[in-house]
Image 1 (cartoon, one colour):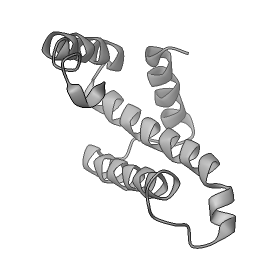
Image 2 (cartoon, one colour):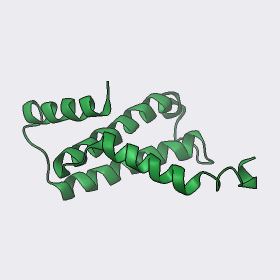
Image 3 (tube, helix red, strand yellow):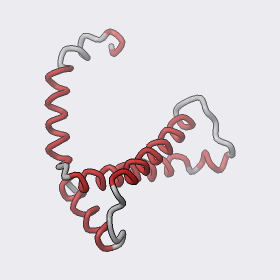
Image 4 (tube, one colour):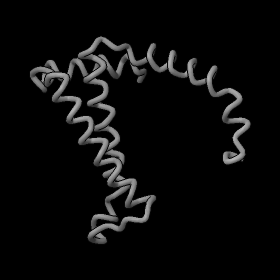
Length: 112
């Protein structure tokens, strides 16, 4: 599935199941909440924080996948609401990063 197709699928889902988009500010707040949930899991899976119970640790990788999908879904909602073509935006962003960072990362001793 392409990014464009994903944007179309989310738009169709919103219009049929979700009834309508939440406003942009509400979706921005939801996005921040979802990113926080990803951060919480990352801190426990890959950082120094521990899980409160062994059962939580057992399902954490599946939870991380689900939370990342939530972030992507809400980001796509915001893109749809604001008229952002994510394919074009990502291509332009990669072009910017390539021009800006072509030598910077190659010459970074910390990355070797």
